[in-house]
Length: 243
Image 1 (cartoon, one colour):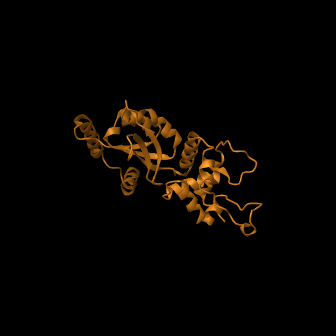
Image 2 (image 1 turned 90 degrees about the horizontal axis):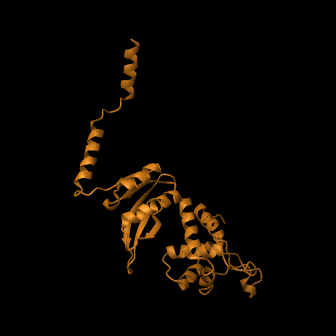
Image 3 (image 1 turned 45 degrees about the vertical axis):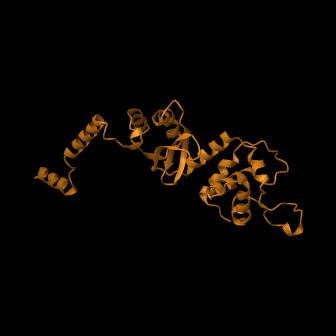
């Protein structure tokens, strides 16, 4: 059974996760369990029982994720059949990895699947049902938030982005165009993006009369520039010089 490139990439990244599990006697591979949990959550599962139920009705997915039939099944009728992990097994295995290692692996996976020239939107959001406020980077091509960072109580969206922009750019080298609202329209952000050879489209608010006036003047200068000569005009100019 063939495995898609993103799915194989996901398994490769999670295969390198450090774990405290003993190598002997393991039934379920760690990368398979982590990938299953992630796919189930993205499909709408909210807890371990739902993830286990999600796995039981998808034997083809389990096979693609690297699950294999047990070598020594307890029952004869279970021979050759892939057994889905139980609702107790899943959290027990997931508890053997640290959240930091998981986040690093997930970020590595997202970095690999982001195609060159992708576009990203930067925005600040308040988490529903919580008092936390986070800075998010959303990649349009894959419809996924690839970066999320807490905005401290003594800072704002701009200061949070200023201390994170270099890490975001180094983590996702394929991101080309960044968009953001007026909160991020600042020289420090624009300078960082230009130095990294990226493009940006930042919104200006009308009350910022000085910035708006500078932008309008720049666009006026661009509009006043003579258009480039067409191929026919260049050919005519060369023939005129020859004659």
